[in-house]
Length: 429
Ligand SMILES: Cc1cc2nc3c(=O)[nH]c(=O)nc-3n(C[C@H](O)[C@H](O)[C@H](O)COP(=O)(O)OP(=O)(O)OC[C@H]3O[C@@H](n4cnc5c(N)ncnc54)[C@H](O)[C@@H]3O)c2cc1C
Ligand SMILES: NC(=O)c1ccc[n+]([C@@H]2O[C@H](COP(=O)([O-])OP(=O)(O)OC[C@H]3O[C@@H](n4cnc5c(N)ncnc54)[C@H](O)[C@@H]3O)[C@@H](O)[C@H]2O)c1
Image 1 (cartoon, helix red, strand yellow):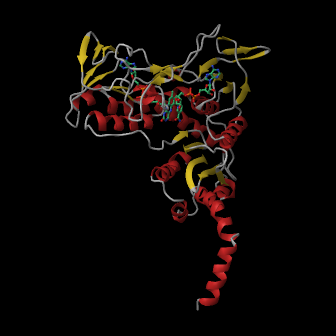
Image 2: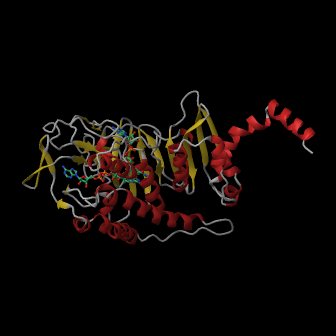
């Protein structure tokens, strides 16, 4: 709209979507309060830890206040002030270039589908009265025992937060915690959650009750059950009438995010290429270039991801494949790691002399991953990265030290280097 296009926005729910109302923003606000509680409980060297006094109603007030403080940015009023026509109704395609919303039929040259995803609720006997990422934010009292089914990013973050605020927490999972993340970093994070008292059980539930899951020979009974089994793309949009192909994983798109109908693009969670807010924002830019400016664009940038626990687990690029070189550095071996009693690691994946993936586990990992994302996006050479001067003493040095373990043997164990040094020492005055 700001560039002069005529734009209609359809939204039946809260403006701002999942991230603002039920995802990133409330979860990070909750984690912030949980971190304060953990800091009190932990204390520090020569500083006694104390039992935190948690006022859960006040914690949730902070969660809601965070949402309402950010909400004006995504509000109907703001979009209208920018010249967008906002219709607060669900859209459904009625043909290849028409969509119906709120009793109106809208014909358009271009469409961008960004309908997001909804929590996966499995068909399980006795499953009722459960919480999801959409309903957990209206809790008024701290759950005495939160059972979380699933072990992805949402489970890790919310287990962490509720445990630190004082709930007993049990995660029930069919595999390890954060199974799509780098295995050692995920295992270390899992061990840290366990050390804080989160119970992790491996089981395949066959029935449920209020706050409870049961499997052959066992089960867990808590006060509340949270489903964290992933989110399924919202596809009930009349896509077949519009000639838009899709699978249960999302709308089928090419690298330019075009669907099987040339007029229609898909972006964000519904495109089935990952579920992250910054990915959705990146997709929006790719679609805008084509739909508004008529320029070509492809979604090919490296996308970082962070699990916002303490320590944070941040990754960009590829995980190691057979044949890759993996170089790591432990925060405990770093000067700042020693002074700050920091736990974590930096791990680089090198393929054919090029950096292809980075994992950081540690304080501030989510902030530091930006630099590595730039390195991957610009295909920066390893030698250039090794030459970057970083502030001492910082935890960001871990990545550079990991790179050092790649270069050291090449520099210090090389007969050629030794010969050159000998010659230089003899010849240079
Ligand atoms: C607990 C939790 C924590 C998260 N934390 C993070 C995080 O820290 N960082 C991060 O990057 N991501 C995080 N995410 C993921 C992030 O919230 C999503 O990836 C992001 O919101 C996706 O944006 P989107 O625009 O694709 O979809 P959404 O934000 O889901 O927006 C889709 C919108 O489409 C509307 N809609 C649906 N159907 C129709 C229809 N037929 N017509 C019109 N409108 C329709 C919906 O009402 C909704 O408002 C988190 C998610 C959860 C659940
Ligand atoms: N910090 C972040 O960026 C952040 C935080 C929270 C959520 N999110 C996003 O929101 C979305 C939802 O989060 P999530 O953690 O629910 O999804 P997820 O896909 O990350 O994890 C789903 C978990 O459920 C398990 N699972 C799925 N089906 C199952 C079944 N039938 N039985 C047993 N286990 C099953 C999976 O093995 C996995 O552990 C994700 O796409 C995630 O990327 C992002």
